[in-house]
Length: 321
Image 1 (spheres, rainbow, N blue to C red):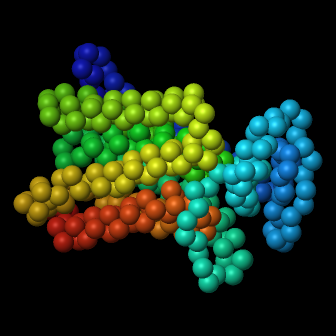
Image 2: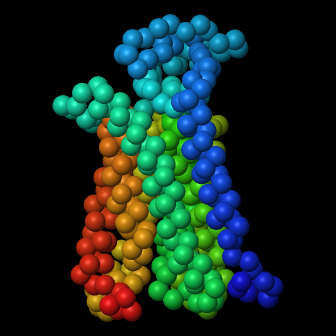
Image 3: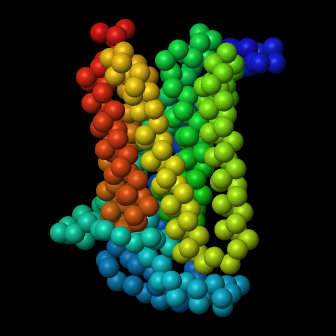
């Protein structure tokens, strides 16, 4: 328990972390049940289902689908790929590089196994700061914990959730549900600890407020404008990609301190390790489904994660050594 700036007790959300685990477990069960039950799919006119055998078949028209929506989908030629949930099988992908030289079976494996493991590693990535935040809240001292990655994470998770929904990708969407809850819990937990750290507090508050403002403005504009679905997905993907790159770079905001003190305590080893594993899996998946907004930022995040791990090896935390 820590004390809020208003003088009352502030319970750090251990229950929220449990809630995150429940949400993630439910999400994974949803994916598995969709695969096992082979649930019927909501369909649209002119759609052709892609089966694991590679054959396609026509699907009847859904009642109530508009002619405008049908013509738009035909014109944009959204990619059809096999996914766990039928609700997400039709998506407006950004295109880009794909995995050449691999068999169809290997590509299908990259499209299904990599993101399923990626949902787990994303969850571990978002939960990796929990121990450090809990320790800081328990001791009522922020210590060496860098709040900037946590503040960017709270915006990035929501951006990726919205992008995943826009392209109807269950893996991208569900992998960020837990992060949305966890990142907000982290901000709630650390803000009272920054009351005496004027500059750090202002930067953290400004990051969250400006990120939330940019997100709200972008989502409102895209919702009210006549931007076609492919344009909406591209704008959301670009925004989420930029945020993820900033998130991956944010631990390096203390690099000057790391080099001067020769101590990388401000870089969380658990967060960095989870980032490297997570970005590796999502890079493979992004290449497999030809989505540059998935593989692009994750390749950058992988490089930045490896850089941070190198700093942890070169300048280990003094209290650990």
